[in-house]
Length: 619
Figure 1 (cartoon, rainbow, N blue to C red):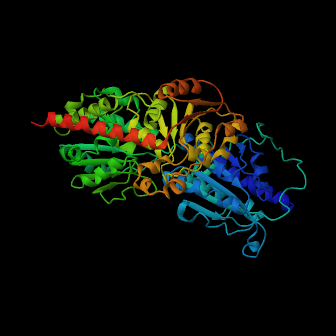
Figure 2: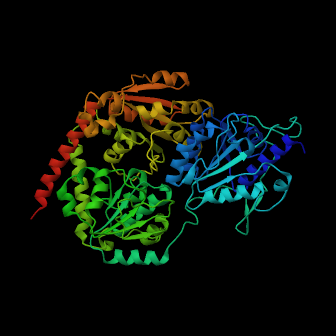
Figure 3: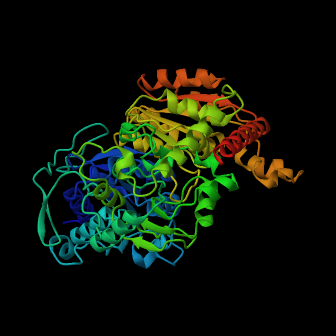
């Protein structure tokens, strides 16, 4: 076997081991040193490969794929700074518990630290952000054909098990190759080009994992096999049984398809008021419609800004699932309610209690625990008052607040310069079963504050693990590739600019996504902060007006582009666009200062009406 043939066989053995665990998707960024891995990927039937010219786009695309497919894609890059471009996506995957397999080609070890071209210290480059890391040895026949712990196949299998979890997360395989990188000829390799099927069929492949034979198939869903803590569940059930004023806080979930329905059903069957973040999976779950009024609430970012509400609605038991809520008002209220018993249910890779408020930390699947507490899914929901653990008036006091807040918001018609009204319009324009991805910064906050709960079967996703605005376009397109359809995205102009390279995948991969770009010519979120008063520094260093016209970006990538003015027009445009094939861009132009004033007007109006409501309720 020639050195080039050994490189190819080594790379194929690595990928074969990953396909044994169900890997079906590979994102490839071009490069020479990764040649053996690319050739190997195109020799395996059932392994779909996509090409991305930008490594950061490739990694965020893989992240999005893992969010909706619930199994990871692998990212293959060449050596050097190409590897460093993967860090932001690795960080988000780590913080969000999303499976991701990073495979980086490298120069031989003797070239490291010796001024060799395109050679950096790749082992350990992702630090503690990966769940497993291996700097593979140089290809050798012994480790290729043997079955020991150092064999390339067994290293890849260990990586796959760590990526799967639970909790899922990113893993890194660093794979050095020496020249000649490729076999002398293509004879016998049976390679497939883009869109073609490779000839090597792995349908009968099996892997030995944890002492058992695992047939090849789809990656295990993250909801399967998640940890349960029976003793801790009993403690929670006991606490719930004696609580008079229980509250469920459903934050952004890594697995909204499991945790969201369980949270909504728990809220309805147990009659517990539930503050449902839009990324929790609960706010738009059909189960929320099983009770009227629904205990699944979404106006809390407005009414928890009133000190009197926080004081009069102090719970005695708070159950928290998911990550830190999007709403700053809710986060502050949790600290104010420090006298309540707070129970966090979480089996993720990172502790979720940065304020140190948890009295109990239940290391278990939130969906599984809440599902158990809610009772059998086959049982008919019991009327909420009969199962309310505490005072029958407790739930009613919250649903009355919710109704009063939305009534106050509805007093004024939607405004063209109010980005919250546009966010609500996007949500209304989507059909049941759709997926909406919301960018960090203002879009997710506007959806949180202005998208009214409804039993619609709408899934909302976002990169809230590290809450960055980088890689949003690529993540969205990866979500679509992973199976989310119809798909829309609400993106700010800075986030859109940050990942315009990602639009290439929309053209080349024939994906169906509607991008709604809220263009206020800069960083609108900073207008909501005290720094806005610090001119002449504020505008150039924080607001950062760019003056770009994004219609030219859409034209460059061959995408339809439409300007929309009012929330009503946007709702109709979104509904029409998601029904059409292909990817297109809708733009809404707003003014940053006017948007801030509209937000302030709504806040003041809601506060006034709620104060009037509370005064009427006071005996």
